[in-house]
Length: 109
Picture 1 (cartoon, helix red, strand yellow):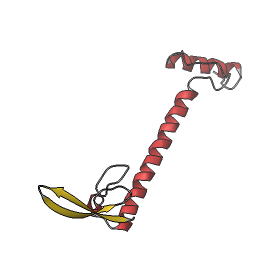
Picture 2 (tube, one colour; picture 1 turned 180 degrees about the vertical axis):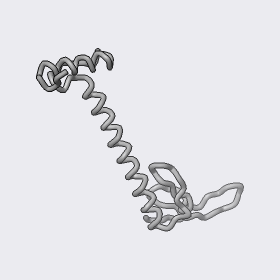
Picture 3 (cartoon, helix red, strand yellow; picture 1 turned 30 degrees about the vertical axis):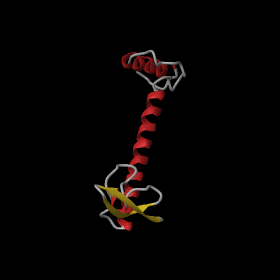
Picture 4 (spheres, one colour; picture 1 turned 90 degrees about the vertical axis):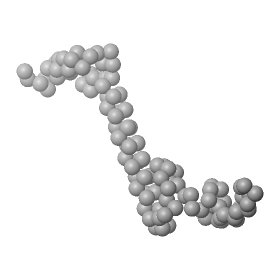
C-alpha cells in the first residue's frame, strides 16, 4: 500500500504519522474490513491469513443462507404434483404429500 506522511495539529503540537493512502487511516490502525478487528499487530502474512478466514466464513454463511431460502421456497410447492402449498400448515403439507405418494403408487400404505 502506498504511504503518505500526514501532519496533525492537536493541542498546538505537530505530530507526523504515516497513513495508508487507500484508507487514510494511521498505519498502526489497520482493521479487517469484514469483522473490524484490529490487525496492526499482525505481520502481512498473518493479516492475509486473517482476511482469508473471514472471507471464507462470509462465503459459508452466504451459502447456508441461500440453502435456507432454497428449502423455504421448496416448501411452497409439492415436489410430486407441483401444487402450491405455501398456504398449508406443516401437518396439512405432510398429509398432501402422503396422498400424492399414494396416488402415484410410490407409497404403499
